[in-house]
Amino acid sequence: EEEMPFLAAINRTEWEKEEQDTHETLVRDGKWTKEFGDRCSELVFIGVGLNKALIHEKLTSALLTKKESIALGGVAGWRNLNDPFFDGSAMDHFELPRPYGSGS
Image (cartoon, rainbow, N blue to C red; front, side, top):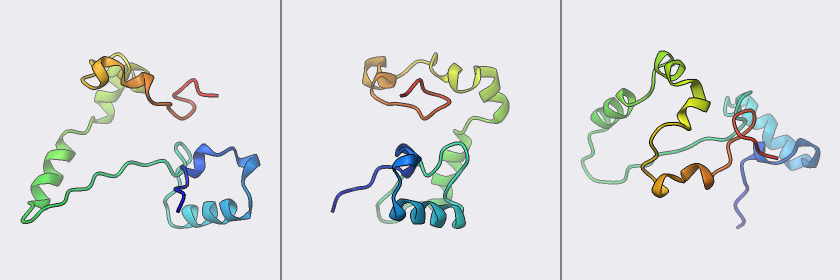
């Protein structure tokens, strides 16, 4: 089975009935945002005896607050942070959704 890209990555003028129905379902289920559409990330942990509460606590404590994000200059400022992945070239490998990226 072919994997469908994020619906938000497909130009709305190219949506057929199936995509329109999918959009309606995503909106109804609260899985569509004005900013990002259906784009999302999932982090999955598989193991025995994992401490779900501790994992949640540690990940939550690593999130930027709104104040911290603003202090960095928002998304544009994040691009100036040290990038430990891809020898510092991670942004060259990914396209950000508008209005954040320069995408086509």
